[in-house]
Length: 198
Image (cartoon, one colour):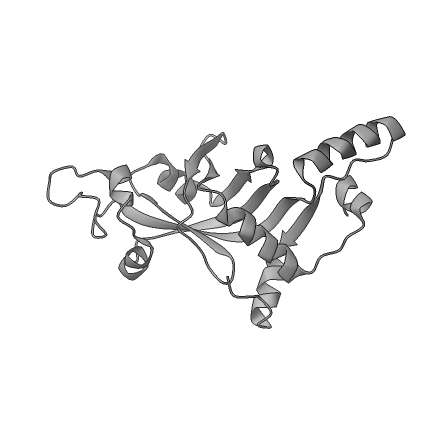
């Protein structure tokens, strides 16, 4: 079922087009909001930098294993990744998925960059020093269940014009469209070798 914006815009982009546009949008975002579920069912969100989006669309984050999010993901692996680019006329995205935790040393080495040390700090004990061997470093990997991406298709001026004219005419403004991609679609395309290189 399409939303009113997508229905009004009358477009039907391919899966590869949807994912290519989404990756372009995410590349403009320095950080995203990662939401986890606490043991009492309440939601906790925090700002996180994406360390990597794999070719088959798994999202990876380097995080502190001693933080609340580790316990929360252990208790409930359902998470959400959100990013808002509306103020820059770039749309937004909401990604629901399931998270797994890892302390694979090779993976941590692969994702590590020196700026991470600023967030972990050096505790002065010769162990928890913010380096790749710091036992606090872990990787959260999110496998997509569903992506909802509002793709902005008009400029700021075009959006304003569209809203004003739609208000007068009673039609639906279409400054963009909500594009939905499921994890099953991604998995099927990956198996067929249809996903484009990032």
